[in-house]
Length: 384
Image: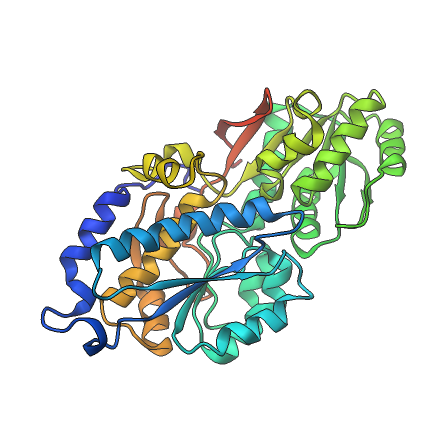
């Protein structure tokens, strides 16, 4: 994987570029005379529920891009519609069917999580609505023959080995305990980590997302295993409870997790003392490293720093907005446009394979640490 960041255009520069291309792809048409006007893109992911912070990060990044676009195209705007899945794959099919009823929607930013992608993407594919997920990392999502599927980050076949290499080479662990929450995302990432760690894995366990709140059994197994590192595949709410209870029982093993835990909600749940020193990996760069005016624009709009995947979602939205600006006003045209794109954004450069994966030459994986209750960049995760 290449760890370098390909970043060139900030929010203001992107707006200027889009505006210069041509207002709504026409020098003479405006308002209701232009078939590109009134089109919509959608956000699909958790805005409420126990993993809502991750979805809100994504929605806020996408909404910032749309608002900047609309400022530059006041006579021909685009709407962002929000679909709150609560991160629940059981709700995803009905919500996806609701989304495709709106024929003005020609692009979906999401689904945000892997489980809801498994449930919702077949519906989007049948309807021909192009999707770009900024965060769903389960590798098998690109193997289902969904023509509309695109992923703007590396999948867990890259994140898993990078997390394992961090455990081996940075933490120098000889005994690792691996557990997951049995979700499509958590189990897939944990399996990739186990495969890469091999004989260093001394024991494993499983819990249940949104159900397990008391971790006495797994903690007893961790203590018995002698592990100095615990890898957790899942989301921040349960991970926060796990590390809080580990520390209460005197377990000093370092917790390592994936991007589902890369959120301040982890430290909020665990308490900053229990969270201290925990490590999360992400197939993304630090949002604070985004180029141009994105960092200041985001904080001015939302009153807080950009979170995990906010910058990637900003780029995903601008890919769709650029497609609309170039006259791609149907599902068929938008799909062809996204399939052929090579787009330089503020978080990365985007080019998709024939399966919708990000080109492997553009993969990024970083490790972050929790210090004093805050998630801070540590280093690019080792690739070998």
